[in-house]
Image: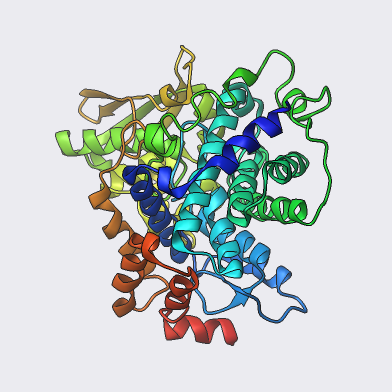
Length: 465
């Protein structure tokens, strides 16, 4: 039996009735968080560009572009919403894939669910199934895959999207194995493009391609179901001989479900997860010692090379680049006691005051190598003040999880802050409540109809101008 067949058997066996109550709860939490992140990006250029290109010579469709009242095809909606949900780098993270799990799956299964008239339970089951699939793929290939330079959100996420959409479509095991095997040829995304619009495009492309692979399989499209283990297949090409462990592909499947352990961590800052421990460290020192930029002579931040290779950006050259600059994020934390949306808008990265603080901040790697992704977030920070004092602190895990999960009671304030950028004030609570009760919905188009009617009038005018 091939790896695709092994996975497919478990995917088709997933049943909503077998899901733990806590798994459904965390699925809804992740859905709320992701939709909020997408709504917050209503005015971002990247998803607008993607929509313009995909919408040429097209008229309408079944699936909503979140933050608007426009509908397009399910695959187009999956891609546009995937880009939108990831462009601010505010969506959840998962250690099993060393990336962002929900953005790779949920936009695809909700968009396809609208096309099918699926229930909320159907969509939640599809999402949890995709989450479990992508997590098991991550266990096989990490950490070599991550360090090699692949962007796991996309190179692994496409399999989560394919699995979730296959489950939603009710494909049998043979069709599902084919969908996964088609997805092998659609896996793409390199970390060299972090700090640009292409990073969120990775998320959009894998949600689209996962749905596409499942739909192709339903129509009888063919693929080599040995595409994972083939000598020129996924594991050999993406990781290389000796750098993956296929024994983990279905080991402990749903025991427990990955969405429960280690789960998905909700971000508290709209920037790369690799900067969050350093932000938390600076915020802790700032509060404890009443630090201000004027009192600080130098800051030395020590993090692991695994994350520093894409966060060591002493002079960010764009707003998206600043989201991946640990130095910039530390500077904003010191200056403001927070790292917020406004620090990644317009020309904020060019601000003279932040440039002054940036010059005092250095970043270097730890001497030791972490074993797994959960150990990669350790930060040791030393601050030297202008009067010669030194203060040091250490943060092992940022307050975003997955091993240090943000309490769910922080979910609604984050959603409200994000949604206010696209939705009318009076509509935010109804949309939040609808997503939080998704399992009761007989047709997910009830949710997207509500979202479509909730957008601000000025947003409608802007898009039709």
